[in-house]
Structure formats: structure tokens, C-alpha cells
Length: 247
Image (cartoon, rainbow, N blue to C red; front, side, top):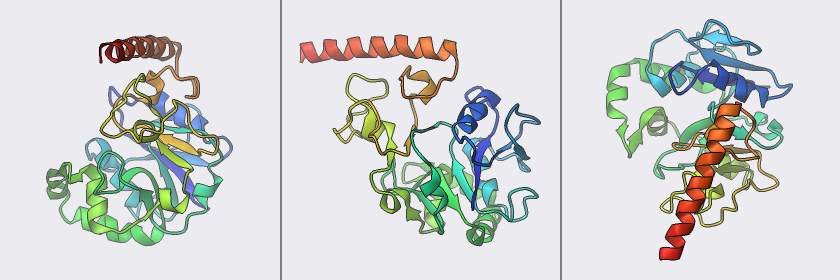
């Protein structure tokens, strides 16, 4: 069975506390954080071996020679995913799988990936042939970041087709016009503010991070973020209602 893995490249936005938050959601499943942190309380770690910037550190998941992860099939989660159900079906994947495009419709999304050993060498060699060139090219909406690179060289299966109606996006599927981060250009119009009963997980991409929403179905992160999130949510609700009255 695949090993569950996250990636933490420490920054002001993402810290070891955020890694602890997501790994608690994995419950009894074995998991590892690929990170530049020397230690994370309560979380097994594996070292990042390269200094790729930001999300490009995820490319190290494909290093077939990594001393901890290289010979393992991997199930990767972004740190800002909220797990709402049993993740066992995700662990039953067999082929390289990514999310269907969320904000960027013409490419897959790398927030959730099943990475079999069989694809690692090809992806790693393709990237390492000229890392800087790939990073310089993947800065436009048509080819954005690591997911733009992966979409350009692979044809992954898509989670939403493999597990229909089980995986959701906060912006596309959950948020309502009175909630933080609502984007009318992206929203499906079916959002109710809470995940459907059979949802396995909810992906957060862009603003807001889940721990900044104050939502009751998001796992607790800290008192500070909970209170701040609730205050922001109330202000957002009031502004939305004012706009509706003026319309």
C-alpha cells in the first residue's frame, strides 16, 4: 500500500504546526512529511535534498533515489487539504493520478497525487534535465507551477473521474456568496457551505487557507486562527448581505 506523504518547505505561510495539523487528520495511516525541518513533534520526517523554491519542492517526491521515499508508491496531500471522510479509497489507486483542473481548467492540479514508483524516473529525469528552465516557463495560467510542468509531460488519471462525487474544491463546490473566498467566476452554484455527506476531502487552493475560515467542519488549528476566522467570516457575511440589498 502507498505511503502517505506531505511536503513542507518552511515559510511564513507554512510551518511545522501546519504539518502537524494535516498529519493528525491521517489517523492511524502511516505518513511522512518531506521537509527542510530537522524535527516535527509527532510527525515522521524525510529530508528535502534540494533547495527548489516553494511548491517546486514537490518535485522531490519523484526522486527515485531518495533514501526514504524513492522505492515507495506515494499518496501525496497538500498541507491545506481538509479530510472529511475515509481516505482508504485513495490508497487503492494503481496509476499516476492527479486532480482535474480547479482554478486552471487546462491542466491538472497537484494538491492530491498518487505517485507510483513506475513514473518517478521519467518525471525526475525530465525535470532535472533543466530545472531552472522548467521553473521559468511555468509562470503563466496555461502552464502554472509544478502542476503545469507535470500536466505537460504526463497524462494522469483524474481523481474526480476515479472517485466521482467524493472529492471537492472549497472555491468550486462549497463556498456560498456570503463566505470567505467566494469566487463567482469559479463557483459551480451548488455550494451549501458544508461538504456533502460522502465527501472524502476538500481542497483549498488560494485564499483562504482552511484554518483561516473559522468553519466548524475544519479541524481545529489554534485559538487565534479560530477567533480571527470567525470575525472575518462575519464581516464577509455582512458585506455580502449589504451588496445583496443594494443590488
